[in-house]
Image (tube, rainbow over all chains, first blue to last red; front, side):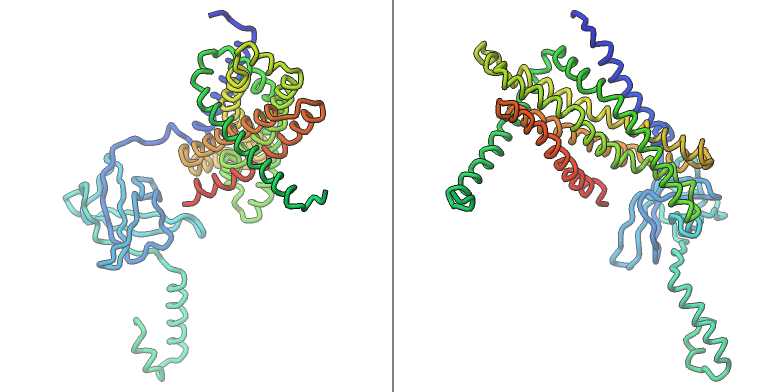
Length: 166
Length: 260
């Protein structure tokens, strides 16, 4: 095939474009760190997931050990059913507990997993039973105000005291 | 005759319908000829050289300055909320998802689309296209299809260059000039930018824009009145129609892609 004078420049242009794509993929999207590691799926039911989203991190001691796979609503128990892909290299005892936490004051929500003491480890398809819901700010404020009101009214509030938690 | 006369309105509507119809027919022919056009890669290479290499300078410089401005403006806004570390994420996401494809397509319409329209319009005015038809050479196949291919290939590459240079520009201003922490700049970016969801959709967008801008430029040139005035009108229309199409398509694509 005969060569053309512009061929080298076309080649250079295509290379520059490809290099830009590779740069974006590696440097900004961090393609290399994608883990194609094997995972096992465990599920858990939460009363309230707050703002948890699919692909949110599952962290233990601050280290990402898995990702939220899907969140569905179970209309039998009226709870949220959360499926998580845990990295196979990390094993957790069967009685580990899950908590929905927030990174920072306004950050994303993630699931914190705390190891239990069981001898047996979680396997694929297991359900974690010990879960703690997301903290809903409105409930927190409501409880706080309720507690305050109770404190302030003292002994004469028989009605309020009956409904209170303490 | 009164311009609101029913006959006038009818003629205008028919004219518009005819334009849409012949445009669609040309588009179909171009799509059908994309395979056969590959048999002459030399023609496509020449067009990529003409559309791509010569647009590289304006795309690179624009990308750099857009990155600079994003770095400055983003820092100014983010530091109010004490989250200047998210600057990298802001710069990368706005470039990869939105500004890269759109601004590149707009610049491409101005830089390369006009050149295509003017070239083909002048070929038509000089009766070169008719001469080709006389020699049983299909001008759509010989002239338009290679240019269409070249536009498709070129625009995504140019958009990638724009985004990459813009990210570097944002880094220069944010990290080198202002002093945002470099680790946080790249770290936040790498955590927040998804290679398929953000990068892939950005490339898909620029690909669609490549089809739209190149096709509009070719259509306007091919349908231009073969007079100096007609060619100048067609060139202007290329910029206007292509820019509006890009912006409209961008809204539609963004709404469907990032609707989750």
